[in-house]
Length: 426
Ligand code: NDP
Image 1 (cartoon, rainbow, N blue to C red):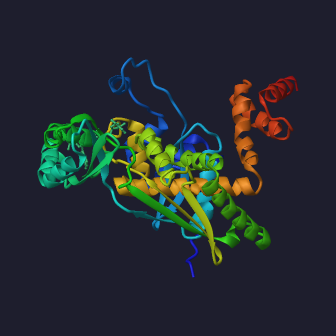
Image 2: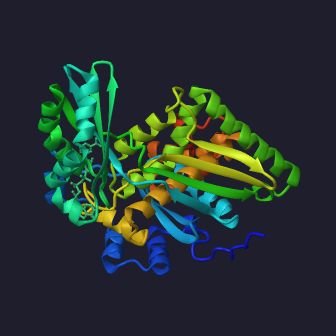
Image 3: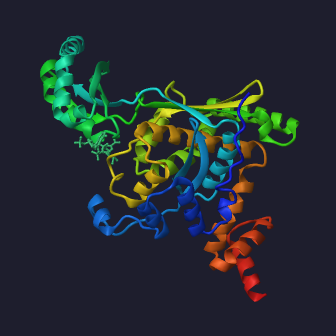
Protein backbone atom coordinates (compact mmCIF):
# COMPACT_ATOMS: atom_id res chain seq x y z
CA UNK A 1 0.00 0.00 0.00
CA UNK A 2 1.31 3.44 -0.91
CA UNK A 3 1.37 6.02 1.84
CA UNK A 4 -1.11 8.87 1.37
CA UNK A 5 0.56 12.24 1.56
CA UNK A 6 -0.99 14.89 3.76
CA UNK A 7 -3.01 17.52 1.90
CA UNK A 8 -0.72 20.28 0.67
CA UNK A 9 -1.23 23.46 2.59
CA UNK A 10 1.48 26.06 2.10
CA UNK A 11 0.69 26.80 -1.49
CA UNK A 12 -3.05 26.26 -1.78
CA UNK A 13 -4.64 28.92 -3.99
CA UNK A 14 -1.14 30.15 -4.83
CA UNK A 15 -2.12 31.39 -8.28
CA UNK A 16 -4.77 33.65 -6.78
CA UNK A 17 -2.29 35.57 -4.59
CA UNK A 18 -0.55 38.82 -5.47
CA UNK A 19 3.08 38.62 -6.64
CA UNK A 20 4.40 39.82 -3.27
CA UNK A 21 2.14 37.39 -1.37
CA UNK A 22 3.52 34.56 -3.50
CA UNK A 23 7.09 35.64 -2.74
CA UNK A 24 6.28 35.83 0.99
CA UNK A 25 4.73 32.36 0.95
CA UNK A 26 7.70 30.95 -0.92
CA UNK A 27 10.04 32.57 1.59
CA UNK A 28 8.14 30.97 4.48
CA UNK A 29 7.97 27.54 2.86
CA UNK A 30 11.51 27.30 1.52
CA UNK A 31 13.38 29.59 3.95
CA UNK A 32 14.97 31.69 1.24
CA UNK A 33 18.12 33.68 1.98
CA UNK A 34 17.49 37.43 2.50
CA UNK A 35 19.32 38.15 -0.79
CA UNK A 36 16.99 35.87 -2.73
CA UNK A 37 13.95 37.45 -1.09
CA UNK A 38 15.17 40.93 -2.11
CA UNK A 39 16.05 39.83 -5.65
CA UNK A 40 12.54 38.43 -6.08
CA UNK A 41 10.77 41.35 -4.38
CA UNK A 42 12.67 43.94 -6.42
CA UNK A 43 12.60 41.69 -9.50
CA UNK A 44 16.35 42.25 -9.95
CA UNK A 45 17.81 40.94 -13.16
CA UNK A 46 21.18 40.82 -14.83
CA UNK A 47 23.00 44.11 -14.09
CA UNK A 48 24.51 45.94 -17.07
CA UNK A 49 28.01 45.49 -15.64
CA UNK A 50 27.61 41.70 -16.02
CA UNK A 51 25.37 41.49 -19.10
CA UNK A 52 27.71 43.80 -20.99
CA UNK A 53 30.61 41.39 -20.42
CA UNK A 54 28.68 38.25 -21.40
CA UNK A 55 28.16 38.89 -25.11
CA UNK A 56 29.38 41.13 -27.90
CA UNK A 57 27.40 44.21 -28.93
CA UNK A 58 25.26 44.17 -25.82
CA UNK A 59 22.32 46.59 -25.99
CA UNK A 60 20.36 45.63 -22.89
CA UNK A 61 18.63 42.64 -21.35
CA UNK A 62 15.56 40.68 -22.45
CA UNK A 63 13.04 39.61 -19.81
CA UNK A 64 10.78 36.57 -19.58
CA UNK A 65 8.35 35.61 -16.78
CA UNK A 66 10.06 33.89 -13.84
CA UNK A 67 7.38 31.68 -12.26
CA UNK A 68 7.01 28.90 -9.74
CA UNK A 69 5.85 25.31 -9.79
CA UNK A 70 4.96 25.42 -6.08
CA UNK A 71 5.22 21.76 -5.08
CA UNK A 72 6.56 18.61 -6.65
CA UNK A 73 7.68 15.42 -4.90
CA UNK A 74 10.90 13.95 -6.29
CA UNK A 75 12.81 11.07 -4.67
CA UNK A 76 10.85 11.65 -1.47
CA UNK A 77 11.77 15.32 -1.27
CA UNK A 78 9.39 18.22 -1.76
CA UNK A 79 10.62 20.98 -4.10
CA UNK A 80 9.41 24.32 -5.37
CA UNK A 81 10.72 24.69 -8.90
CA UNK A 82 11.43 27.99 -10.66
CA UNK A 83 10.38 28.05 -14.31
CA UNK A 84 11.19 30.61 -16.99
CA UNK A 85 8.77 30.49 -19.89
CA UNK A 86 6.64 32.83 -21.94
CA UNK A 87 4.03 30.16 -22.83
CA UNK A 88 0.90 30.88 -20.76
CA UNK A 89 -0.30 27.37 -19.87
CA UNK A 90 3.03 25.70 -19.03
CA UNK A 91 3.36 26.51 -15.31
CA UNK A 92 -0.33 25.89 -14.60
CA UNK A 93 -0.17 22.52 -16.37
CA UNK A 94 3.00 21.48 -14.54
CA UNK A 95 1.49 22.49 -11.18
CA UNK A 96 -1.64 20.47 -11.96
CA UNK A 97 0.38 17.42 -13.04
CA UNK A 98 2.65 17.65 -10.01
CA UNK A 99 -0.33 17.72 -7.67
CA UNK A 100 -1.82 14.52 -9.09
CA UNK A 101 1.50 12.68 -9.30
CA UNK A 102 2.68 13.80 -5.86
CA UNK A 103 -0.51 12.31 -4.35
CA UNK A 104 0.51 8.94 -5.81
CA UNK A 105 4.04 9.05 -4.38
CA UNK A 106 5.78 11.48 -6.72
CA UNK A 107 8.74 10.85 -9.00
CA UNK A 108 11.71 8.56 -8.56
CA UNK A 109 14.87 9.13 -10.54
CA UNK A 110 18.05 7.33 -11.51
CA UNK A 111 21.27 8.99 -12.64
CA UNK A 112 22.85 6.31 -14.83
CA UNK A 113 26.18 8.07 -15.21
CA UNK A 114 27.60 11.57 -15.35
CA UNK A 115 30.45 11.78 -17.82
CA UNK A 116 30.76 14.24 -20.70
CA UNK A 117 31.97 13.01 -24.08
CA UNK A 118 34.28 14.91 -26.39
CA UNK A 119 35.73 13.94 -29.73
CA UNK A 120 38.77 14.51 -31.91
CA UNK A 121 38.06 13.76 -35.57
CA UNK A 122 41.09 12.80 -37.67
CA UNK A 123 41.25 12.56 -41.47
CA UNK A 124 43.88 11.56 -44.02
CA UNK A 125 44.80 8.62 -41.80
CA UNK A 126 46.85 6.23 -43.95
CA UNK A 127 45.97 3.01 -42.07
CA UNK A 128 42.87 3.07 -39.84
CA UNK A 129 43.61 -0.26 -38.16
CA UNK A 130 47.20 0.62 -37.31
CA UNK A 131 46.16 4.07 -36.13
CA UNK A 132 43.44 2.62 -33.87
CA UNK A 133 45.94 0.16 -32.39
CA UNK A 134 48.49 2.93 -31.82
CA UNK A 135 45.96 5.10 -29.96
CA UNK A 136 44.71 2.23 -27.78
CA UNK A 137 48.29 1.25 -26.89
CA UNK A 138 48.91 4.81 -25.68
CA UNK A 139 45.56 5.07 -23.89
CA UNK A 140 47.04 5.80 -20.45
CA UNK A 141 49.41 8.48 -21.66
CA UNK A 142 46.65 10.17 -23.70
CA UNK A 143 44.37 10.23 -20.63
CA UNK A 144 47.25 11.63 -18.55
CA UNK A 145 47.93 14.33 -21.13
CA UNK A 146 44.23 15.26 -21.16
CA UNK A 147 44.22 15.52 -17.37
CA UNK A 148 47.40 17.61 -17.38
CA UNK A 149 45.55 20.12 -19.60
CA UNK A 150 42.98 20.76 -16.84
CA UNK A 151 44.57 19.73 -13.53
CA UNK A 152 42.01 21.60 -11.39
CA UNK A 153 39.21 19.19 -12.39
CA UNK A 154 41.42 16.28 -11.32
CA UNK A 155 41.95 18.00 -7.94
CA UNK A 156 38.16 18.29 -7.63
CA UNK A 157 37.87 14.50 -8.03
CA UNK A 158 37.09 14.46 -11.76
CA UNK A 159 39.14 14.09 -14.92
CA UNK A 160 39.45 12.04 -18.11
CA UNK A 161 38.21 8.50 -17.43
CA UNK A 162 38.04 6.57 -20.66
CA UNK A 163 38.68 6.74 -24.39
CA UNK A 164 37.56 4.79 -27.41
CA UNK A 165 38.18 4.97 -31.15
CA UNK A 166 35.89 4.40 -34.15
CA UNK A 167 36.40 4.76 -37.88
CA UNK A 168 33.54 6.24 -39.94
CA UNK A 169 34.29 6.47 -43.68
CA UNK A 170 37.35 8.75 -44.00
CA UNK A 171 37.32 9.75 -40.32
CA UNK A 172 39.02 8.19 -37.36
CA UNK A 173 37.24 9.52 -34.30
CA UNK A 174 38.54 9.44 -30.76
CA UNK A 175 35.91 9.75 -28.03
CA UNK A 176 37.05 10.97 -24.63
CA UNK A 177 34.86 10.54 -21.53
CA UNK A 178 35.44 13.00 -18.73
CA UNK A 179 34.09 13.33 -15.21
CA UNK A 180 33.34 17.06 -15.07
CA UNK A 181 31.96 17.02 -11.51
CA UNK A 182 29.54 19.95 -11.05
CA UNK A 183 30.19 21.66 -14.41
CA UNK A 184 28.66 21.12 -17.84
CA UNK A 185 32.25 20.84 -18.89
CA UNK A 186 32.45 22.46 -22.34
CA UNK A 187 35.65 24.29 -21.49
CA UNK A 188 37.20 21.36 -19.61
CA UNK A 189 36.57 19.02 -22.56
CA UNK A 190 37.68 21.50 -25.18
CA UNK A 191 40.94 22.19 -23.30
CA UNK A 192 41.65 18.47 -23.01
CA UNK A 193 40.81 17.68 -26.63
CA UNK A 194 42.95 20.49 -28.00
CA UNK A 195 45.82 19.31 -25.80
CA UNK A 196 45.81 15.75 -27.19
CA UNK A 197 45.39 16.70 -30.87
CA UNK A 198 49.11 16.87 -31.68
CA UNK A 199 49.82 13.50 -30.05
CA UNK A 200 46.93 11.92 -31.96
CA UNK A 201 48.25 13.28 -35.27
CA UNK A 202 51.68 11.88 -34.47
CA UNK A 203 50.27 8.48 -33.46
CA UNK A 204 47.98 8.12 -36.50
CA UNK A 205 49.97 10.00 -39.16
CA UNK A 206 46.67 11.74 -39.86
CA UNK A 207 45.34 15.29 -39.54
CA UNK A 208 43.10 16.51 -36.72
CA UNK A 209 40.01 18.22 -38.16
CA UNK A 210 38.59 19.36 -34.83
CA UNK A 211 38.47 18.60 -31.13
CA UNK A 212 35.21 19.50 -29.38
CA UNK A 213 32.74 18.44 -26.73
CA UNK A 214 29.75 16.44 -28.00
CA UNK A 215 26.27 17.49 -26.93
CA UNK A 216 25.10 13.92 -27.50
CA UNK A 217 25.70 13.21 -23.83
CA UNK A 218 24.90 9.49 -23.77
CA UNK A 219 27.03 9.04 -20.65
CA UNK A 220 24.84 11.51 -18.74
CA UNK A 221 21.53 9.67 -18.93
CA UNK A 222 18.84 10.33 -16.36
CA UNK A 223 15.58 8.44 -15.87
CA UNK A 224 12.51 9.77 -14.08
CA UNK A 225 9.53 7.51 -13.32
CA UNK A 226 6.15 7.98 -11.73
CA UNK A 227 3.35 5.64 -10.81
CA UNK A 228 -0.09 7.25 -10.73
CA UNK A 229 -3.11 5.51 -9.28
CA UNK A 230 -5.54 5.28 -12.18
CA UNK A 231 -8.40 6.08 -9.79
CA UNK A 232 -6.87 9.54 -9.27
CA UNK A 233 -7.28 10.44 -12.94
CA UNK A 234 -11.03 11.14 -12.64
CA UNK A 235 -13.76 10.95 -10.01
CA UNK A 236 -15.67 8.45 -12.14
CA UNK A 237 -13.82 5.11 -12.26
CA UNK A 238 -14.85 4.23 -15.83
CA UNK A 239 -13.64 7.63 -17.00
CA UNK A 240 -10.37 7.19 -15.06
CA UNK A 241 -9.76 3.82 -16.78
CA UNK A 242 -10.58 5.31 -20.17
CA UNK A 243 -8.23 8.27 -19.57
CA UNK A 244 -5.39 5.90 -18.60
CA UNK A 245 -5.96 3.79 -21.70
CA UNK A 246 -5.98 6.86 -23.94
CA UNK A 247 -2.78 8.15 -22.34
CA UNK A 248 -1.07 4.84 -23.13
CA UNK A 249 -2.30 5.10 -26.72
CA UNK A 250 -0.99 8.66 -26.95
CA UNK A 251 2.41 7.43 -25.74
CA UNK A 252 2.38 4.65 -28.34
CA UNK A 253 1.47 7.09 -31.09
CA UNK A 254 4.54 9.19 -30.21
CA UNK A 255 6.71 6.05 -30.58
CA UNK A 256 5.34 5.33 -34.05
CA UNK A 257 4.76 8.67 -35.72
CA UNK A 258 7.55 11.31 -35.86
CA UNK A 259 4.98 14.05 -36.53
CA UNK A 260 3.39 13.30 -33.19
CA UNK A 261 6.76 12.54 -31.52
CA UNK A 262 8.08 16.04 -32.23
CA UNK A 263 5.03 17.62 -30.57
CA UNK A 264 5.07 15.08 -27.72
CA UNK A 265 8.70 16.00 -27.02
CA UNK A 266 8.02 19.72 -27.44
CA UNK A 267 5.54 19.35 -24.58
CA UNK A 268 8.24 17.68 -22.48
CA UNK A 269 10.62 20.54 -23.26
CA UNK A 270 8.01 23.08 -22.18
CA UNK A 271 8.91 21.93 -18.68
CA UNK A 272 12.56 21.00 -19.14
CA UNK A 273 13.60 24.22 -20.88
CA UNK A 274 11.78 26.35 -18.32
CA UNK A 275 13.85 24.84 -15.47
CA UNK A 276 17.06 24.68 -17.49
CA UNK A 277 16.78 28.39 -18.34
CA UNK A 278 15.83 29.39 -14.78
CA UNK A 279 18.93 27.59 -13.49
CA UNK A 280 21.28 29.26 -15.99
CA UNK A 281 22.04 26.07 -17.92
CA UNK A 282 22.59 25.85 -21.68
CA UNK A 283 19.17 24.86 -23.04
CA UNK A 284 20.44 24.54 -26.63
CA UNK A 285 22.87 21.89 -25.43
CA UNK A 286 20.16 20.00 -23.55
CA UNK A 287 17.73 20.17 -26.49
CA UNK A 288 20.35 19.06 -29.04
CA UNK A 289 21.39 16.06 -26.96
CA UNK A 290 17.85 14.96 -26.15
CA UNK A 291 16.58 15.21 -29.73
CA UNK A 292 19.57 13.19 -30.93
CA UNK A 293 18.76 10.62 -28.22
CA UNK A 294 15.12 10.55 -29.36
CA UNK A 295 16.42 9.39 -32.78
CA UNK A 296 18.94 6.86 -31.47
CA UNK A 297 17.49 3.86 -33.34
CA UNK A 298 17.12 5.75 -36.62
CA UNK A 299 13.58 7.03 -36.07
CA UNK A 300 12.64 10.09 -34.04
CA UNK A 301 10.43 8.92 -31.16
CA UNK A 302 8.74 10.26 -28.02
CA UNK A 303 11.13 10.48 -25.07
CA UNK A 304 8.58 9.21 -22.57
CA UNK A 305 6.56 6.01 -22.33
CA UNK A 306 3.29 5.48 -20.44
CA UNK A 307 1.98 2.02 -19.56
CA UNK A 308 -0.71 0.50 -17.38
CA UNK A 309 0.55 -1.81 -14.63
CA UNK A 310 -2.29 -3.19 -12.49
CA UNK A 311 -4.10 -0.25 -10.91
CA UNK A 312 -1.40 2.23 -11.87
CA UNK A 313 -0.49 4.34 -14.86
CA UNK A 314 3.30 4.25 -15.03
CA UNK A 315 5.32 6.93 -16.81
CA UNK A 316 9.01 6.90 -17.59
CA UNK A 317 11.42 9.22 -19.37
CA UNK A 318 15.12 8.73 -20.07
CA UNK A 319 17.26 11.40 -21.68
CA UNK A 320 20.77 12.88 -21.56
CA UNK A 321 20.89 15.71 -19.03
CA UNK A 322 24.38 17.15 -18.60
CA UNK A 323 23.09 19.77 -16.17
CA UNK A 324 25.51 21.93 -14.16
CA UNK A 325 25.43 23.65 -10.82
CA UNK A 326 28.52 25.78 -11.59
CA UNK A 327 29.97 27.45 -14.67
CA UNK A 328 28.63 29.44 -17.60
CA UNK A 329 26.35 32.22 -16.35
CA UNK A 330 25.22 30.32 -13.24
CA UNK A 331 27.33 32.28 -10.76
CA UNK A 332 26.80 35.60 -12.52
CA UNK A 333 23.05 35.98 -12.83
CA UNK A 334 21.29 37.01 -9.57
CA UNK A 335 17.99 35.41 -10.67
CA UNK A 336 19.79 32.13 -11.35
CA UNK A 337 21.30 32.25 -7.86
CA UNK A 338 17.78 32.79 -6.51
CA UNK A 339 16.54 29.82 -8.54
CA UNK A 340 19.21 27.65 -6.88
CA UNK A 341 18.17 28.97 -3.47
CA UNK A 342 14.49 28.14 -4.18
CA UNK A 343 15.63 24.60 -5.08
CA UNK A 344 17.70 24.41 -1.85
CA UNK A 345 21.09 24.57 -3.61
CA UNK A 346 20.95 21.28 -5.53
CA UNK A 347 24.10 19.64 -6.85
CA UNK A 348 24.26 18.85 -10.56
CA UNK A 349 22.90 15.30 -10.21
CA UNK A 350 19.99 16.40 -8.05
CA UNK A 351 19.17 19.21 -10.47
CA UNK A 352 19.21 16.73 -13.36
CA UNK A 353 16.68 14.60 -11.43
CA UNK A 354 14.45 17.63 -10.93
CA UNK A 355 14.67 18.60 -14.60
CA UNK A 356 13.79 15.07 -15.81
CA UNK A 357 10.86 14.88 -13.38
CA UNK A 358 9.43 18.23 -14.45
CA UNK A 359 9.71 17.06 -18.08
CA UNK A 360 7.70 13.91 -17.32
CA UNK A 361 5.22 15.88 -15.22
CA UNK A 362 4.67 18.37 -18.05
CA UNK A 363 4.22 15.47 -20.47
CA UNK A 364 1.58 13.89 -18.23
CA UNK A 365 -0.38 17.13 -17.93
CA UNK A 366 -0.27 17.74 -21.69
CA UNK A 367 -1.30 14.18 -22.62
CA UNK A 368 -4.08 14.12 -20.06
CA UNK A 369 -5.50 17.38 -21.41
CA UNK A 370 -5.10 16.17 -25.01
CA UNK A 371 -6.95 12.90 -24.51
CA UNK A 372 -9.73 14.39 -22.33
CA UNK A 373 -10.88 17.99 -22.70
CA UNK A 374 -8.38 18.85 -25.43
CA UNK A 375 -5.44 21.19 -25.07
CA UNK A 376 -7.30 24.37 -26.02
CA UNK A 377 -9.48 24.63 -22.93
CA UNK A 378 -6.61 25.18 -20.49
CA UNK A 379 -4.48 26.97 -23.01
CA UNK A 380 -7.13 29.49 -23.99
CA UNK A 381 -7.96 30.22 -20.37
CA UNK A 382 -4.52 31.73 -19.94
CA UNK A 383 -4.08 32.86 -23.51
CA UNK A 384 -7.20 35.00 -23.08
CA UNK A 385 -5.23 37.17 -20.64
CA UNK A 386 -2.45 37.66 -23.20
CA UNK A 387 -5.04 38.62 -25.83
CA UNK A 388 -6.65 41.05 -23.39
CA UNK A 389 -3.26 42.69 -22.81
CA UNK A 390 -2.51 42.80 -26.53
CA UNK A 391 -5.89 44.48 -27.06
CA UNK A 392 -4.74 47.23 -24.70
CA UNK A 393 -6.63 46.29 -21.51
CA UNK A 394 -5.28 47.97 -18.37
CA UNK A 395 -4.49 45.96 -15.23
CA UNK A 396 -8.01 46.47 -13.86
CA UNK A 397 -9.60 45.47 -17.17
CA UNK A 398 -7.53 42.36 -18.05
CA UNK A 399 -9.46 39.80 -15.96
CA UNK A 400 -12.87 41.04 -17.12
CA UNK A 401 -11.87 41.07 -20.80
CA UNK A 402 -10.30 37.59 -20.46
CA UNK A 403 -13.39 36.21 -18.73
CA UNK A 404 -15.76 37.56 -21.43
CA UNK A 405 -13.37 36.42 -24.15
CA UNK A 406 -13.49 32.84 -22.87
CA UNK A 407 -17.25 32.82 -23.39
CA UNK A 408 -16.84 33.75 -27.05
CA UNK A 409 -16.72 31.21 -29.84
CA UNK A 410 -13.82 32.94 -31.60
CA UNK A 411 -11.30 33.92 -29.01
CA UNK A 412 -8.93 36.15 -30.96
CA UNK A 413 -7.42 39.63 -30.80
CA UNK A 414 -10.26 41.20 -32.77
CA UNK A 415 -12.84 39.83 -30.33
CA UNK A 416 -10.73 40.99 -27.36
CA UNK A 417 -10.59 44.50 -28.84
CA UNK A 418 -14.36 44.50 -29.38
CA UNK A 419 -14.98 43.37 -25.78
CA UNK A 420 -12.64 46.02 -24.43
CA UNK A 421 -14.40 48.71 -26.48
CA UNK A 422 -17.75 47.53 -25.18
CA UNK A 423 -16.82 47.46 -21.49
CA UNK A 424 -15.27 50.92 -21.79
CA UNK A 425 -18.59 52.19 -23.13
CA UNK A 426 -20.59 50.66 -20.27
P1 NDP B 1 32.86 27.14 -17.13
O1 NDP B 1 34.20 27.02 -17.71
O2 NDP B 1 32.27 28.51 -16.98
O3 NDP B 1 32.80 26.46 -15.69
C1 NDP B 1 33.40 25.27 -15.44
C2 NDP B 1 34.55 25.53 -14.52
O4 NDP B 1 34.09 25.82 -13.21
C3 NDP B 1 35.43 24.33 -14.36
O5 NDP B 1 36.30 24.20 -15.43
C4 NDP B 1 36.12 24.62 -13.05
O6 NDP B 1 37.24 25.43 -13.33
C5 NDP B 1 35.10 25.48 -12.30
N1 NDP B 1 34.53 24.77 -11.15
C6 NDP B 1 34.35 25.29 -9.92
N2 NDP B 1 33.81 24.39 -9.10
C7 NDP B 1 33.63 23.26 -9.81
C8 NDP B 1 33.10 21.97 -9.51
N3 NDP B 1 32.67 21.66 -8.28
N4 NDP B 1 33.05 21.04 -10.49
C9 NDP B 1 33.47 21.33 -11.73
N5 NDP B 1 33.99 22.53 -12.07
C10 NDP B 1 34.08 23.50 -11.13
O7 NDP B 1 31.76 26.31 -17.90
P2 NDP B 1 31.78 24.90 -18.60
O8 NDP B 1 33.12 24.47 -19.03
O9 NDP B 1 31.02 23.95 -17.75
O10 NDP B 1 30.99 25.20 -19.92
C11 NDP B 1 29.67 25.67 -19.89
C12 NDP B 1 29.55 26.85 -20.81
O11 NDP B 1 30.12 26.54 -22.08
C13 NDP B 1 28.13 27.21 -21.07
O12 NDP B 1 28.02 28.61 -20.99
C14 NDP B 1 27.91 26.75 -22.50
O13 NDP B 1 26.92 27.53 -23.11
C15 NDP B 1 29.24 26.96 -23.13
N6 NDP B 1 29.62 26.18 -24.31
C16 NDP B 1 28.88 25.12 -24.78
C17 NDP B 1 29.29 24.41 -25.89
C18 NDP B 1 28.44 23.25 -26.34
O14 NDP B 1 27.46 22.93 -25.72
N7 NDP B 1 28.78 22.59 -27.44
C19 NDP B 1 30.53 24.73 -26.61
C20 NDP B 1 31.24 25.82 -26.00
C21 NDP B 1 30.80 26.52 -24.91
P3 NDP B 1 38.52 25.40 -12.38
O15 NDP B 1 38.65 24.02 -11.88
O16 NDP B 1 39.60 25.80 -13.29
O17 NDP B 1 38.21 26.39 -11.29
